[in-house]
Amino acid sequence: MVKIMELIDEFRVDQQIQARKPRYIDLCMYRLKLWATYLNDEYEITEIEEVKQLHIKNYIRYRQQLGKEKAITINGHIATLRVLFNFLIDEEFITELNSPMRRIKNLKEEKTVIRTFTDAEVKRIIKAVPEETYSNIRDKLILIMLFDTGIRVSELCHIKEADVSARNILINGKGSKQRLIYISKIMRRYMRKFEVAKKIRFQHKYPEEIQDYYFLDQCAEGLYRSTINKILKKYCEVANVRKEVRCSPHDCRHYFAQKQLRNGLDIYSLSRLLGHYDTQITANYLKGLDQETILELGKVKSPLNMVQV
Image 1 (cartoon, rainbow, N blue to C red):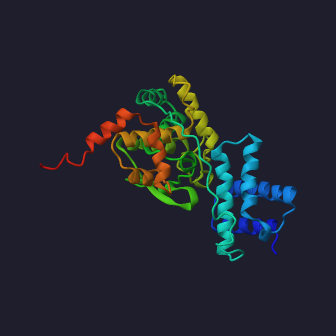
Image 2: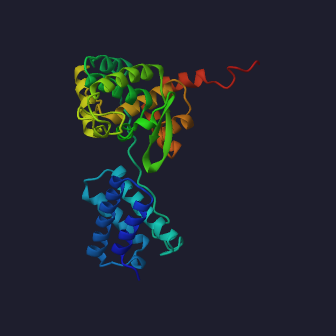
């Protein structure tokens, strides 16, 4: 018989060996310890062999009855348990047939329409940023990059000098997955401006005083997510963006995805650009497109358009 808490600790070590992000590991530990506490308090279960499918189902029901979490959040708990038990199967603590997660399904989530920026709002946001100082030029390029590539804010913060080439940028995404994003003409123009301003701004610093990130603050150190959030919110306010748009960096990602779909890019190619593991995740962005747009896309991409009949 093996203690659940011992296995959770072993799972943590395995995730660290696989170079999972610390925030992801911490979230997994938080969820798993809540689950382990529930098993102990409700059933006095402390060993993995005692866990049955009914205990998992009752735990899901318990989280529903708390009334504090939406289905998407509870599905996060289910996903973490699934990852744990897959680890236990791989390490031969249990067999696949004996896994209590074997027939556990996700809860049905509410279908929500993703509302994001309009083209006019994006134009106003970018134009609202002056080009007078190093910080101004940097902020404008950050906003252009968010809107033009759909990059995650955490990915943008971690771009290194060596990741940037003449034609593309290497991105280190979720789950240690790497991908390339393109550099458009407008991005290249503002990247040149930024690189000149950056060189002038830090010309009196020793190389060892300058961190190796592409985007730096006034002290030559990397930027935090919170800094980029503040930059976007500041210029969204100046640009008078509608209140129903949250004005978070992830909304820039939504704008990018929906704009690419409107332009006729296929789901598979879009998922590659966004760094999604599954095209089903990318398909969620279709919910934000109105029926007229879908019909127009279908008409433009009609199979017989280029066929002589």
